[in-house]
Length: 104
Image (cartoon, rainbow, N blue to C red; front, side, top):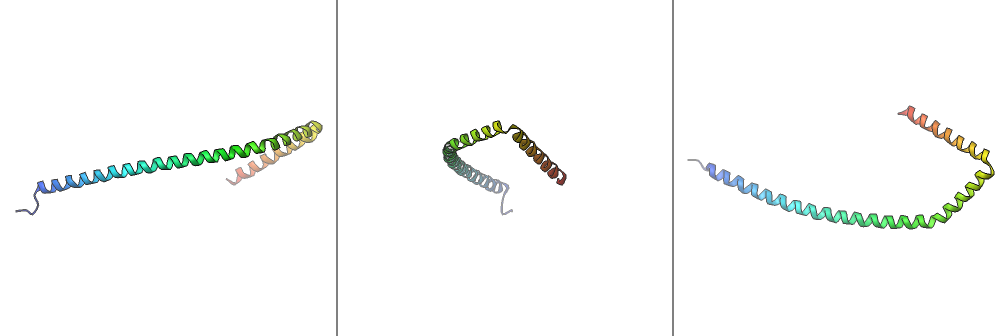
């Protein structure tokens, strides 16, 4: 005579499986709630960041426009110097890219 019959073992396994399924369902619900909350928080934070950046850019636009006008006038007054400066900058960027490319 065996202490445990096959029916007892099967019943015990089925009971454990049902308990695990309930735990998985509860964990899924909890994860869903946390995910929704995290998404909402991240969305609000992104909205605040966008508003702040938009405000800063709007405040800086007059200064940017003024400096762009000054740059345009300088290029118009000294085209040779502007071309030389752009050429020198292009050579510097090319040299840096070549040096970085050799290291990798």
